Amino acid sequence: MSSFTPPPHPPRPPRPPQPPGASHKWQTFAALISAGVGALTFAVGFIGLPAAGVPSPAAARETATVTATVTTSAGPAVQSAEPGGSGGDDSTPSDVESPEVQWIGPLLSQQQGFDLDLVPPAVGDDDIDPWGFDGQKATLIYNNYALVPEGEEPDFSECKLLATTKPQPQLSVAAGRSVCLFTDEGRVAVVRVDSANPETEIVNLTVKVWEKATT
Image 1 (cartoon, rainbow, N blue to C red):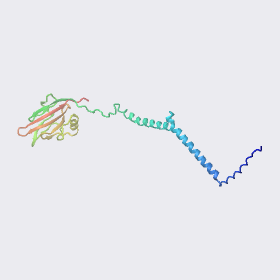
Image 2 (cartoon, helix red, strand yellow; image 1 turned 180 degrees about the horizontal axis):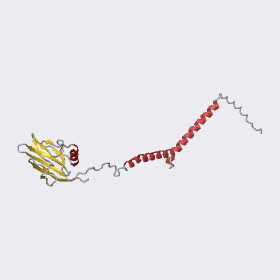
Image 3 (cartoon, rainbow, N blue to C red; image 1 turned 135 degrees about the vertical axis):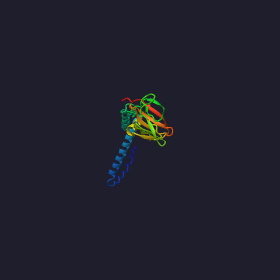
């Protein structure tokens, strides 16, 4: 029995020649694909770090920046509350404390002066002396008087300032106006002329005298 021998395979046609530079282009394209896949893999792994419980370097930098910002902004606020020592209250007490009122009340003068250092004031001194008239105004003499601005009711400090800076040795005062003065013993007083009647020569006054201020 004769053996069968298959016919030999036809020879493979030769590969067509590639154009110059084609091999280099494929190598470059393959390198770009490999680099892109590597970058994508790195990004996915980097983003997946926080989910796996591993802190991301970018997150750590962001956290550090926020912490530094909070610490810096909180610093001046703490310092600004320190200088006053009382929660930032800059209020200061008045330099001059008002003494208690020694006496307040009405006086009726018919061309006589009063000693305002006494309680109650008595006739016999020239702390306030309505002696004479200027029309319907009472003329005050024998002391230095400072006219109070119309409509104002000065306190101790204001009255003391007026009597110190704007004294006049003689002053005609209309009804409803007030004057500030110093008594013979250095007390501050404010006197309001309530009425002045040239025919009866009677002047009604309301007087307030403060106790002598301590220095």
